[in-house]
Length: 151
Image (cartoon, rainbow, N blue to C red):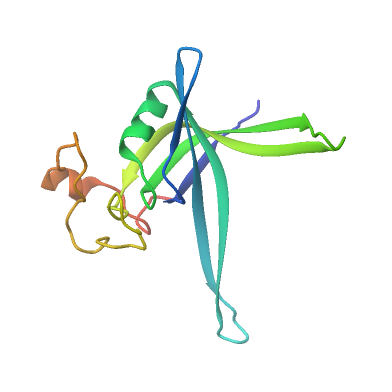
């Protein structure tokens, strides 16, 4: 038995890029995940951010292209895919891609068209998004928040 499963919670580094592959929509974006820790000896706080290449295919890709934008916070479940190719200089190129199978929107993540360094994240208001109704109070209460996920 084997398992290929990835779970990531992070913020988009830029707006998603949507393209067509045959009849299928593919949306690609970069996702930043960060961890913070305190050095026990010095008390100094450290932070490490890692960037992940994510692709969402089909209906998941359509949803990502429509609703995600730079700064959006999203929880992704998917699989890892490793790609290799021959470079022009004769070397090998490598890329790891997370293929998103499902997306969950988390937090407000800033507003479209603005730098989204957590602007409005604590305001209690959802950003305005064309074609998307504001979530109900029950939906807001049941939505997972960073730091309150069950793992």
